Image (cartoon, rainbow, N blue to C red):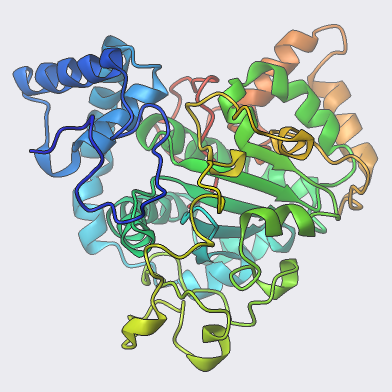
Length: 421
């Protein structure tokens, strides 16, 4: 058994510097908490070796600021949920036959990696057609698909990315496109969003690395302004809210050859295929996009020379070896070398070029006045945080109706869950 205070033996990236609280960068107190956490789980018969490695236990510890009793309660509750939801059986038997149609009415897909090796995940909520979506599937099946994808994400996608870049990859880089989004669409999927956020935050913690919300509509900055004070600063630092002038920000985090052309990149390839059935591979050269029709589409590339070399300079850290803020997926304070642009990216809001909202802006204002009195701003902020799952996608304070056991309170200090998966 390897020492979690040391780098994993399979790390091949010479520039890799793990963030605080990860394997290879633990304080003595963090290490002792990990040892205690594992021992208590083993003593109480809760420990499941095949899915409770040190990296997983550290995710739960980070989610609870290395408070062992709280982390244990979180993990025990997650295990209880797994049994009740039937996760182990679900991943073996679930057949999402309506997947192609669902992807048409709710576009979401994985596509290559960002500069830090994270899988790039794209959601286009402006293309969400709720009526058509719920004509072919149900919220229950959507949640089952979500859970299957979380499992695949942890067991296949992250290991594939880690192997490609030569160091552990534990989080995702998400682009959420709100172009032409309608607030009314959010209202109609509020129960699903609420349940999905609960699943992510309570049972799959610490999965968000960077989160870009682009083409943010008018009024979104107001919502964010209410939410931001109630979020953990680490979570805020992961979220970048942008209007229509997002290209440079995305290219600072995602290589141009990996970023889809529709978002300002140079990649002409189709998206990487269905979320559940395929695991994308990753290529190092921009020309691979055109030379190899199978690159990044979920097929194993037979040409070893086209797979991403572990020491590829565009992945991981800056050429000088210093970790950039973009690689901070939580846990560490801001780097002392950050410039003003980096600080602006840390949870910054681009208010200069907000895109027109699909629904009339008065729709949001009317909703705000009716449901949240102006003289109760503190309660408004707390409720919005719960409703949005810390991400800006949900708009419901109601308990989800689709699944009985999703009424557990959401921890507003760990709002990493979104419709990422």
